[in-house]
Length: 225
Ligand SMILES: Nc1ncnc2c1ncn2[C@@H]1O[C@H](COP(=O)(O)OP(=O)(O)O)[C@@H](O)[C@H]1O
Ligand SMILES: [Mg+2]
Image (tube, rainbow, N blue to C red; front, side):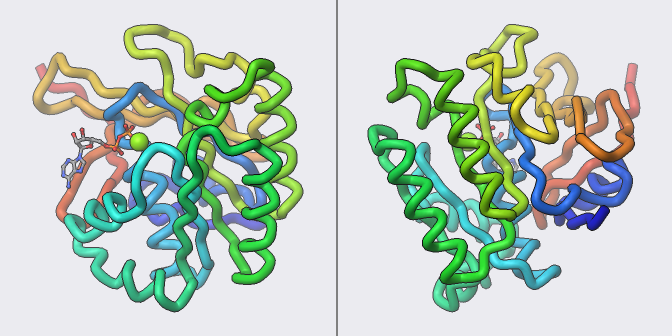
């Protein structure tokens, strides 16, 4: 199976070398756990280090804010990547009908040779739908049909053990990554766990997710007392 590198140092060894190409991955976690930055790094490094064009579909945040976050990590050439259409930001209002989004995404994927997609977030899109289960199935399947490696962000309900509010995206997607923020310790505060990754072995359990000057990194979990 072909693998693609996440661009997050320390992460790929948790999934036997990288994401299986063209798989759909759910990135879930409560607000503030680092989902947006992880996804932005996946796309930015995709262009920078692996020559794969990326599309960021943003429902929640203005893309100009995303570029500001990127610059905090020294990823200043993100502007250049946007100008040369290696990295594309598509702003979609939450009220937009799902198939309209898919049409726009399909057109961009074909025209600009997109290999990596981020949808931030699935949970913001389905707010507009009555039948969330049906929406999640059809939306994820339509994006999967484009043959790109996709990261779907979903908010986990804070303070709950549930991964998602919808209860279906974790079954539909090929992989599930869970980010958590633990505000009980100064040293171990952000963790990342792989819950599933179809077609590959995984290292389950929590590892640490750390912010550095140049972005996120995964480190082996060490408990401090
Ligand atoms: N440059 C940075 N340095 C350190 N921490 C940061 C930086 N940027 C963001 N963060 C942390 O990440 C959190 C938000 O990350 P984000 O990816 O937007 O979360 P989510 O999308 O899961 O809500 C912030 O609350 C902050 O704690
Ligand atoms: Mg976010």
